[in-house]
Image (cartoon, rainbow, N blue to C red; front, side, top):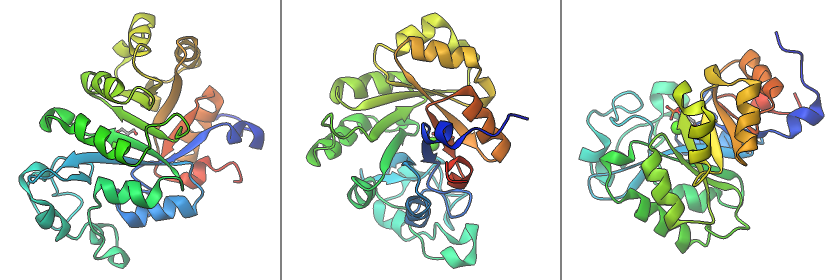
Length: 253
Ligand code: G3P
Ligand code: CA
């Protein structure tokens, strides 16, 4: 096992609450994001998709089946239909009535209060979603360099290239669990538009961390669901740990 990192070492790392504090509350709901804020996370991570009638909402899967009492594809349901679903009770009776939040609700409730790591989930299903996200961020002046605590990431690299063109001052991240994306050439290419290289922790090594840093990017890794995994990433000296359990990453613990 990794040695327990010092408080100083742990303080350097951004504590990102994956889908909110998803270990304790229903992922991608206000309950989960509020809990992450209470737990002193530095960022909440949110998954963004689009309803049939064009509203941006936060939900992870491309169907509502796993995390709500409804069925069907997110993109086949209107905002009204999505809002009528119970997105909480699957995680526990006390969360009954939690709704799928809109992207705008999240921006308005949390910007300035906690960092927001925005994942465009399957943007290839939602043509033009990049422009929509850019517009909502600009409307709120969150695209200015002083808003360092907004990051936009995706597994879809073309989408992130586009996002970087639309919002050149906002930090961009690329997500992968593919070792083929960890070569020096691949990292160099990512660094032409991305500020963060965010791999699953199974492919993280010290060498990778050094190479990401050598390409002037930061590295955030996911998804931590055990203290051992968090301690491994502390030892690797990543810049951010994306976890369902913010307490595993909290320097005070
Ligand atoms: O933030 C990284 C992580 O969220 C990527 O995977 O499937 O949980 O969206 P996923
Ligand atoms: Ca995600």
